[in-house]
Length: 112
Length: 115
Image (cartoon, rainbow over all chains, first blue to last red; front, side, top):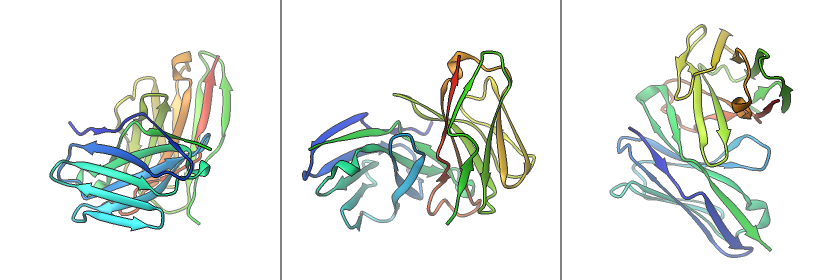
C-alpha cells in the first residue's frame, strides 16, 4: 500500500542549512506537501509542489522532487531556532477525494 | 482567515468514561478527518467523513466512533476511554474535488489524558 518514509530526527546549528528527506510510493500522487508542527500545536501547511515540477523555491525554503526515485526533500537555508519543529511530508492519493498519506515526521532541532 | 477549531486543548478523563471531542470548521469543507498523533508513530487516521451523516473507517477505528450531523461539525467519540487512548488528537478538513491543492487545514489539537 501507500507509504511515506522520513527519518525521525535531524539536528543542525543555527545558520546552517537543513535538509529533510522523504520517500513516497504512489507514483500517481498529484501533489506533495510539507507541513510544520510547532510544539503543542496542530500542523500548518508550509509548502507544496505539483508532481510535474522538479523544484520550488519560497524564500528560505527549497523543495526538490525526484519523481523517478520518488524522493522529496525540503531545504531550509540559514536555519533559525524558530525553525525547530516537526516536519511532515505528505502525498496525495485517491483521486478527487483528496486523501493525504503522512510520513511519521522529522523532528528538527536547531542548536544556537 | 479559515479555521478549524477543536473545543478543548487539554482534557483529562477517567478510564471507562465516554468522551466527546468536538471539531468545527468554518470553510464549508466537505471532508473532515480525525487523527491521533503519538511519538514515533506519526499521524494515524481514525475516521473520516466525506459528507453529512457519512463516515469511513481509517487505519485505527477500534474503540472510536464519529458523528457528522452538520457539515461544519465532526465529533470523535471514545465509547469507553482507556489509558491507551491517551494521545494528541488532531482534526483536519479540506474541500472535495480540489485534488488537494493546499492540502488539509488542521485544528490546534486536543491532548487527551486518560487516567
